[in-house]
Image (cartoon, rainbow, N blue to C red; front, side):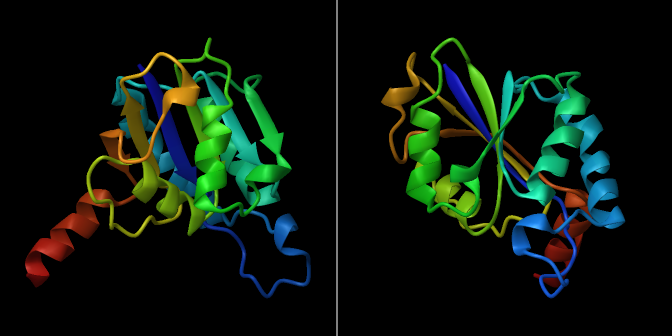
Length: 173
């Protein structure tokens, strides 16, 4: 079995900051939201063995906090090709991973992560992916290159304040 955990970066500073988009940092709210995820993520059976991150500042910061949950800060790598690629490029990136790894995390951006989840999941993934969200998909394959579209089994989809959002949604219907 192989598993991909798609991690959307935490809340970042506004796009109109006087700096290049790639340099935008996380906000304090973003850092706190991500930390709220730690207990839920540590309860999951599937944990990453390596974290692959976009080279943008906000994803690098997210990857560092996320990897610290698992005491694996030395297992992060940064990739320019994960800075706003299309969804198919994210899938292709996963397909090129070392088969010695069973589970990986890819920290990136929306809408590309959301679209990659739509490509990979065997069901219909039509949820909006908020900042700090983690989507774990597993694949009944032995080699990364054998991952195909609509093949992934949803293991979990977690995001900060999930219970609050679900409660509000159920009250509005």
